[in-house]
Image (cartoon, rainbow, N blue to C red; front, top):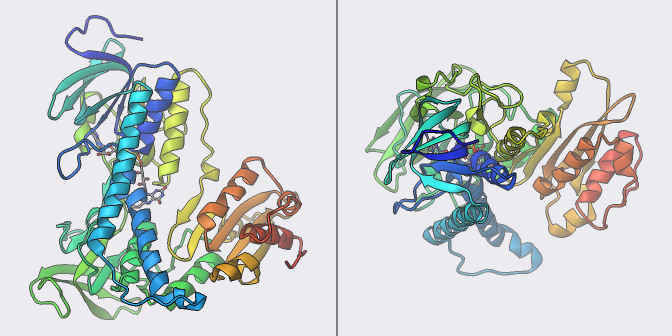
Length: 490
Ligand SMILES: Cc1cc2nc3c(=O)[nH]c(=O)nc-3n(C[C@H](O)[C@H](O)[C@H](O)COP(=O)(O)OP(=O)(O)OC[C@H]3O[C@@H](n4cnc5c(N)ncnc54)[C@H](O)[C@@H]3O)c2cc1C
């Protein structure tokens, strides 16, 4: 597959631009399938070291889960150990140490990817990759960075990911107005914290700092809480968040955001003031020490020089692709956050693998109906497939079964009985159409539903499978049984 007559450039079968979960996993899979692969990524640590892994590893999935775990441990020690007869005195939170631990977890992941690149003979370039021109049925790609390079390949995967969207007129300074990046490396819990946007990222990061003592107010433009989540599950989650003291305002219009010197409660002497109107149209002001803005993410295509080769972009700046991740150009593919679909690491990974397999002449496949979603708050929220409101909208006849963790022995022993498991199955065939969960460890429980749905299982199939006792997964079995109004009542 090499391109002849290009002595100045290094030739590869495949060049992957971006080493987030879409890019690095696609690059490794392609190398395993026998291709000579280069992967270019520009991310560097604060001290200038290459840091492959993208948003997910550096400022997304991994660091947020590290901080969620640390803050949950703290909250348990502060508020729940007493129930177990454990007295803690002199409890203190060392935020710097927590952030240091998170950084170490991130580094282990960066190093793991470098190791995998080496093991699978993927050539990694740290720098910015951009299209130069089309050549001999392939493409020339420039790497700008400490060591500029020119590479060529017949196949290109664009996996450049996404970046946080700023509020108009309020750019991120990562001091007072924070994206996910700044929100994951605060030096101390702010006394008052504002969060704009109650999506996955806003709720997770808001939860971290609330557990560590911040008074958190979340402003959400949409009139419903977690609109894409099954209504019943979202309501249950909302009750739990209200109980924890997370203030959530829906149907809000955010106006001017000012960063000034005089705030009511600031530790730093600076404060952010947000003008907003509530759902009734009444003018309000929110004054906080720090403001996290989590109102969505923008695909990263600015630095790609897409025009040089005529790569078609959409209105959001996303790379336009078909269901198989093919762009408008032969041999150019795009995966992950930079294309349509949910901005989730595992969706990016699946697309990366599928594209590598397609390039190798295999039949890579991603089932977009079976991409699970998880929100790692406490309680956790997880789901796969259709929500009840979607089934109603689509006129699908369905049966529903729910089972609360309150009635689960393992949940009682854990001391965490919030939430439930809910099954939705086709009224005629009993095929599982959606599984929705809110409660302890449901990020792990949802995998059973994914497997079942991938094999097109019925709710009765799950109800007839032996589940360990006592386990949280018994709630999954009970919810499946409840679809046909049966129960074992453990
Ligand atoms: C706070 C937070 C928490 C999250 N938690 C979860 C979670 O729990 N589970 C989940 O599934 N998803 C989560 N996500 C979403 C997840 O991080 C993304 O969906 C995922 O990282 C997308 O992968 P990707 O490979 O498409 O892009 P990215 O991970 O964004 O990686 C793209 C890489 O390409 C690099 N790049 C961009 N342009 C160029 C260029 N021209 N040249 C060279 N390199 C370039 C970028 O620097 C980056 O390293 C979270 C996101 C955030 C912000």
